[in-house]
Every structure is written in C-alpha cells, then in structure tokens.
Image 1: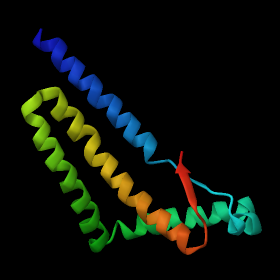
Image 2: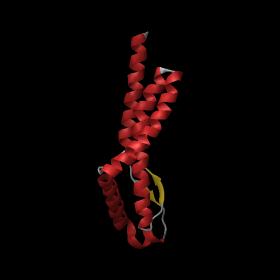
Image 3: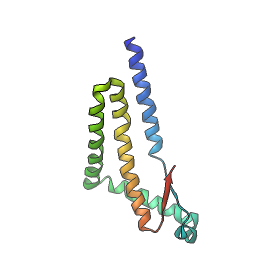
Image 4: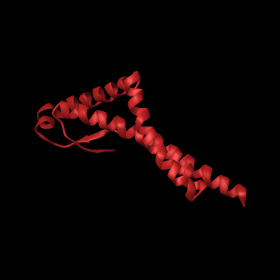
Length: 125
C-alpha cells in the first residue's frame, strides 16, 4: 500500500512540474486599445519580447533574485501550513507553489513594462 502512495505522490509532483514548465513559456495577450491598433501586431510582439527579455535580465540581478526569493518564501508558509493535513498536500504545495510564485512575479514585471509602453494586458496564455 505504501508503494502506491509514493507513486501517486510522484505522479502528482511530475504533473505539477510539467504544468509549471509550460506556464513559464506563456505570453501575454494584449487588449486591443489604440496603442496596439496604431503599432500593429509585429511591433507589439517585439515589445512583448523586449519586456520578457528585460524581466529575465532583472531576475538574474541580486535585487531581482531577492524579490523572487521573497515571493517564494511567501508560498513556503502556505506549504508549511498544509503539512499537518497530509503528505500529498505538502508535495503538491512544494512542487507547484514556488514555481507559480516565480512566474507571477515575472508576469507582474512584464505587465508593468507593457503598461509603460501604453499597452493593456488582457490575459496570459
């Protein structure tokens, strides 16, 4: 019985890791405001690419790493709280929580970069 529980936990962790890695390649979808209409899809795509690159550069600096680590420590508290309810909850929390928080912080950076250029972010795909 113990082996099947370990397999189940590993499967959940693996699926969450795959979902997290797919999410890291997502891109923002822009609201069709006047700035997007004037610049067109080619320039908008280049602006999105530039903001994504700027975010990557920023989160490789000491300050950016500090910000990302601060977001990850926030989700660690949630993982610790879930520990009392069972091992599966802890595994899912650790496997997906830290990954998602890093993505959220990067998305926030990219969203603000695009707002500074006059765009409005509608969603992320």
